[in-house]
Amino acid sequence: MKKLLNDPATVVVDALRGMAAAHPELRVDLEHRVVVRADAPSQGRVGLVSGGGSGHEPLHAGFVGPGMLDAACAGEVFTSPVPDQILAATTAVDGGAGVLHIVKNYTGDVMNFEMAAEFAADNGTEVACVVIDDDVAVQDSTWTAGRRGVGATLVVEKIAGAAAAQGRPLAEVAQLARRVNDEGRSMGMALTSCTVPAVGHPTFDLAENQMEIGIGIHGEPGRRRVPLASAAEVAAMLVEPILADRDFAGADGVLLFVNGMGATPLMELYLMYDQVSALLDRAGVRVARSLVGSYVTSLDMAGCSVTVVGLDDRLIGLWDAPVCTPALRWGA
Amino acid sequence: MTGNGSWIDAARAASWLRAAAAAVHDQRDLLTELDSAIGDADHGLNLDRGMSAVIAQLDADADPPASPGALLKRAGMTLVSTVGGASGPLYGTLLLRMATSVGDAKSLDAKDFAVALRAGLDGVRARGKAEAGDKTLIDALAPACDALDGTLASGASFAEALSAAARAADAGRDATVPLVARKGRASYLGERSAGHQDPGATSMALLIAAAGTPAEG
Image (cartoon, rainbow over all chains, first blue to last red; front, side, top):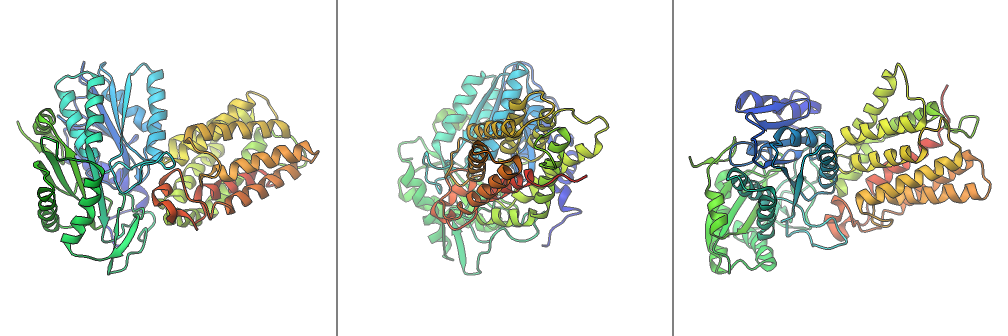
């Protein structure tokens, strides 16, 4: 394993310490491993809390700031945060208008956020929860844990954050978040595995001439291992299942988000964006907004994911609204 | 925990947790290997971290909990706060429900223990929304509960019942190999999850076996 580390056991808190040093506009609670806007709580405004295992940076702490999240909880690498952390974050951002939990659909995350919401309710904080499950690689069925939350999480956090900043009530912010999730579909692929620092070797082996289609963001293998193919062929393997799952032709336009898994150069991501947008164009899907970059990552995995979210004028307005976080910032 | 008698007091409950923690620590690499095949390669690390925290509390106890229930409750809360993932809420819920079941009793007999373990199983089922056959830790825990009840009903000693429970948990663990996972991250693999032993059932079998480990000292 070749990584920039002092001690694999303290990688999460060591990184949070750096985040605190680099971003004085954030309050970093190292004991609870929670990153909070320094001005939290905002009285009378809905608070947004997300979180999950570490290793997906900049998700989630990189999206804490005006126009997006109020707090993020960092679990161990690829491991859900625990209820104490989530409760600390929820309490810190509760300005009396309730708190929305944005949770990616993984068994552990859902259970830990559920326990934290029970504790918060005991303390008198109103909590709503939206579970993100946009990954079309997983067959949705009552017999499985359901689809995973991947790229659409960022879009939900941005749009719900904009609605909360406008002073919308909890029920409306939660409903918007659910709508974005319903409108979002994603599919990912890996060229290489990733290495969890405390494990020290790759989570799985992928031969030089192979790739994994339908990968998740935890180094868990995908559904199909196939010979390495051209970017054009990879783009088709990612776009086809997305379009087969939802008809975007009727939307006012879509957000096309081409995401890097952590070790893929931006050059390759733009190359993929070119391929993917051409396929959408051919399918009659109009791209209204775009995002390209490594935002929902899987440590040092090489590969990419494609997320398509159907938009309308209101959602476009909320996407365009100002945001000022370490990883995403535009507007005023 | 069986020791020379069939009663469990707080000290015996503590030695169960110590034996379980030692087994998880010894097998942590195996648990992580099993998890990397069908999960996300963290089960051994996470459970070892949580059980170590439970033991650190026991070691630091100036005034140890007076009842098995108080001890199990504290251990359950510690697991919930330190393990993370799905295992934290599930193992935590198991111990918390056992604690609720036994209340403040200073010592438990075999029947109390069997009832408590089944209450824990019911809690885990509800928290995880999983049933036997889903390729989860329930596949080791449920047969262990059945074996405890069955052998105690037929007049076996507590020690005999615990070793029957351990054998049943091991058999349940082994039987997860051909199953297709329906819960947790392994379920994302669909048919590809078959042919692998479930890491959660593996750690659960260690916990059950530890209950039959004779107490030291």
